[in-house]
Image 1 (cartoon, helix red, strand yellow):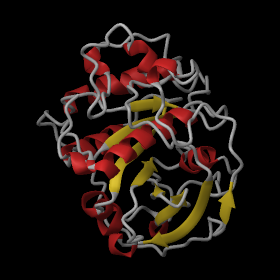
Image 2 (cartoon, rainbow, N blue to C red; image 1 turned 90 degrees about the vertical axis):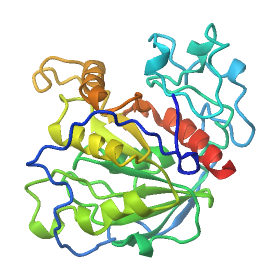
Image 3 (tube, one colour; image 1 turned 120 degrees about the vertical axis):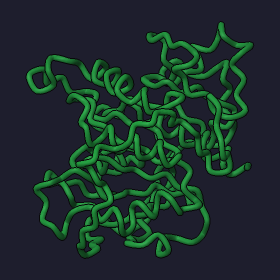
Length: 319
């Protein structure tokens, strides 16, 4: 998988001339106040968690634990995400042992320093220029309202209330920065697609989210959350295609993979909905984007996300 514009890990995936549906404009401007009452502005230091992750040394690929790698699904090479400076041509026999479990992502030599030992809410912003200016690498979480974004963030840092969750969608209204290990950021962005929200609570794409994606130099990758318990939504497909058209680095995070609501999802399992989504976006991308299956209930995908973030982050820092 070839990557272009490597300092920001932009990868050119879009090849189709398809454009977003004319009825869909994710950058329609709406005004609403910024509220940061949903986060606790305290610093938490965690004991070393029981995890498969390494804290400082590079992960020895040949001795990587069995749990984080996928040993049940066979992938053709063109369906894998191969990080920069990762040679798989001469290692086809052992390649399956290097694919993160529940994903299409190959581990690289940069997958180190993946544990979360400290997490701190820093600030909320409504303009890109108001975001932290220390230049630390950051990963943005975004998805349709009620996709489980806050739950995933809490799962990643092993803290239930770093980002307070709500059963009512539309609570995240600003660009919210959480500093991890004093060395990088998780960024919680407003959800989209909650039509029932009051006008002042709707996502103000044109004002700050679009600008953040296009102009935030410290952005390593956008993690686009997709609900795997239901069939693909048009708004999610259009969102993914917009990121691809604008060459914004993207990883697909499929949430709620523990759910089996057959009557509501057409009788399909989450794995089938994940495959369907991949097929539907294939026409928009030259190469398959990286993706990971997750559950905030069972913590499925937590270690895999952190390892993926680590290898992207460490490559970004080096280059």
